[in-house]
Amino acid sequence: MNSTIYKKKSPLAVFLIPAFLFMAVFLYYPFAMNIYNSFCNITGLGTAAEGFNSPWYLNYGKLFQDPIMNTALVNTMLLMILTIIFQVGIALLLALLIDNIKKGTQFFRTVYFFPIVISATALGLLFNLIFLYDGGMVNQLLMKFGMTDMIDWKDEAHFLFTMMTPVMWQYVGFYFVIIVTGLNNISPDIYEAAEIDGASGFNRVRYISLPLLHNVLITCLILAVTGALKVFDLPWVMMGAGMPMDQSWLTGTYMYNQTFTMGDVDYGSTIAIVIVVIGVVVSQVANRIFKEKDY
Image 1 (cartoon, rainbow, N blue to C red):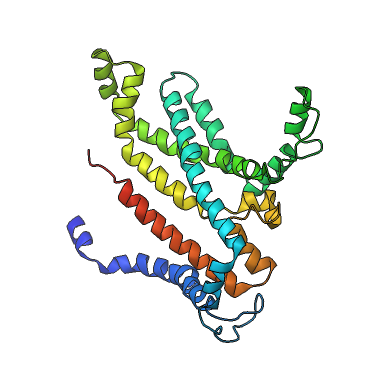
Image 2: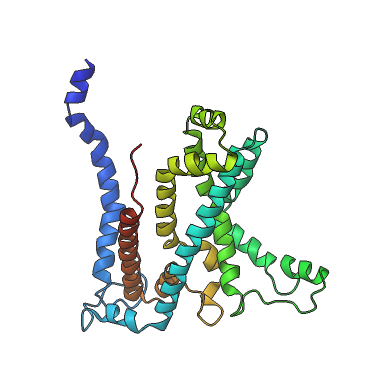
């Protein structure tokens, strides 16, 4: 009976065709239209294309001459690096610390994962209040410790720190859960054997935990790198309009601004294509550099 079910492939279509149609309508068709729109002249949201640009590659040429797009790309690449160092790095450190305590592990897991379930818009408003120039929590604390001049945390000297900090903080818990799950899959017998052989806690982490977490860490790194390209909500809420002086743009926020604020739909479509291309290239490069191992 069971073998007959698995031999018949036709029932699979009942489940696969609706899913494929859903993806075709809401993923493949919009993506194809986005490519088409990037070569067209569209004057505003909801308006039809007025034909192809002259020349047809006008928007792609504009990308190389747009200094704000260059700024957005640099900031996005910087965000990728910081994501690997701080999001994945801090998540790994916290997971290793939690793995070595006996009591309260569930409490810490809940606390570290909590930022993920909070709306990014709410977090953006919260951090706006924290970094507020007049009356913000950070400036009030600094005043308590003797600082006389308040700091504008959104000026040219501090905007990167102000924008990147909540992004790093929000997603640490996401990678923390993935790494903790990987640690739980390591057999306790391995640690017991190492302890009997006299291995210290540091050596157990170095020679057992980290090597056996290799594939999990590779997954986290790829997710972190590609996820940095999609960051939008927190920076948009905190650093709207690219403040200060168009220096805080990311590829995601700049695309949104061009499309929905400026109404330059065709150029926004072009930026979206660039984001997709960069994401595919970066993920492929990361897969080749950080290869998974078979154990």
